[in-house]
Image 1 (tube, rainbow, N blue to C red):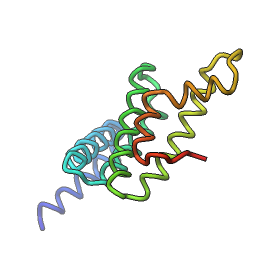
Image 2 (cartoon, rainbow, N blue to C red):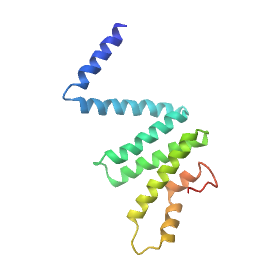
Image 3 (tube, rainbow, N blue to C red):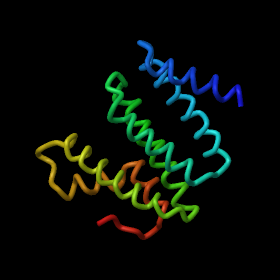
Image 4 (cartoon, rainbow, N blue to C red):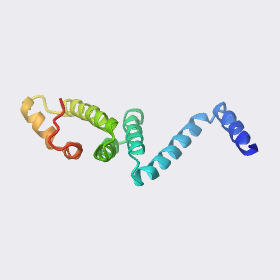
Length: 142
């Protein structure tokens, strides 16, 4: 009982401290490490939670290179797909949202002179969409 009181006092003190941003990043990284371990053990809930965190990182981490930001989305797609293949229903909705996000991103990066059909074809042939489509063969996102 004494240890938990000390821990909670430490958390309260550090959350009010000037270094709370650093502490929050540390806590977030520790949480991701724990989720990473649970994903390796096959927990669909952990896989979706970690994937959501990676998508969130894609939007909030401005200092990452284009390649590293894309890697975050690729990893998220793999984790959502793994959870979906295990029958975890929320993962399917997450995959659809990720596909929509990726299509919007793909449209922004496409040449203006490309036809809509060419843009769609290259999008569906992309490696990340190949990963997403393995979650539910024959499933077409509306």
